[in-house]
Image 1 (tube, rainbow, N blue to C red):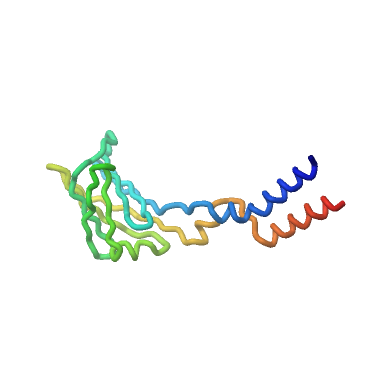
Image 2: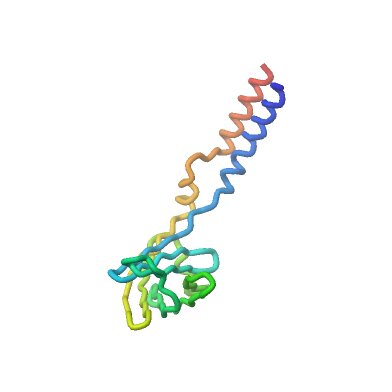
Amino acid sequence: MMKKMFLTGLTALMLLPVWASELPLPLPLLVAESEAFEIVGRLEENALILHVDRGPDNSPVLAATLSVEAGGKEVEAQFRAESGDYRIDDALWLAPLRAAGEHALSFTLIAGEEADLLVGDLVVQAASEQQTGHGFRLTPLWGTVLLAGFGGLAAW
C-alpha cells in the first residue's frame, strides 16, 4: 500500500513541469466603447474576432459595416452570420498586432442609419509575462530536488 502511494506521488512530481508547461496562454483582448456601441475583441492565432453590441442594452449589432484601422492601414471586418461576430483574417494586417505591447485601433461602424467612431487598445503580453502569469511553476532544478528528497525518504 505504502509503495503504491509513493509511486503515485513520484509520478505526480515528475509530471508537474509538463502540466505547468501545457497551460494555455491568455489571448490578447481589446475593448472599445462609445455612448451607443461597444466592441469587444480577441486576437486569435489566425484572426481578430470582434463582437459588436449596443451599449445601453447589450443587444448584438448584426450585419453592420465595420472598418478597423491600425498603424495607418485600414481593413474591413467580415460579418459571420453563423456566429454573430466580425472577423479579420488578413495576415499582413494582423502581423504587427502580434508584437508585445498596446496597439491603438480605430473602428468605423455603420449600422443602418447609425454611424460611430470608436477607439480601443489591443493589449498583447510578452511571452515571459504570459508564462509567469500562471502562478506556480516547477523548474527542473526544484523538480530534481523534490524527486531526490522523496527518493531519500523512501529509502530511509
